[in-house]
Length: 150
Image 1 (cartoon, one colour):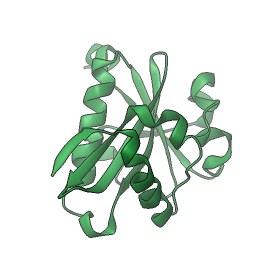
Image 2 (cartoon, helix red, strand yellow):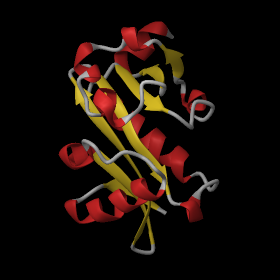
Image 3 (cartoon, helix red, strand yellow):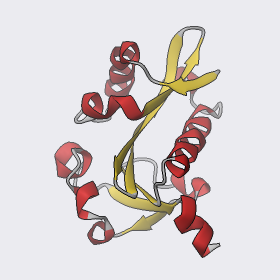
């Protein structure tokens, strides 16, 4: 399994994975340059994206194909994305989820209130309707902000 930056050629495969998992496509095309993918034997096994808004970012579109779930692909993608966020100077990463609230705490994410999310992040397609208002909001500190709290 190889984790790499996504290319435009990966977009149809990632959109297909997202659709198959009932995840929204809104904003994916516009932010696809910040996606990473897991590839095995020339096939996309998973993907994840990061939309940056200054020192805050939105983790979005985390998806793994049904054939590769439970094999650590998702964990590798999340860890790689958080490393890239740290390297980019991001201090806070947010996410919305309707199904994975119990998955993300292992990476340091904690539930937070929508009102605590920076306005720039709330202006994203995910917050503006791609995800329902009932989606759980989670936050993780990265980079300098995380080190300052340690």
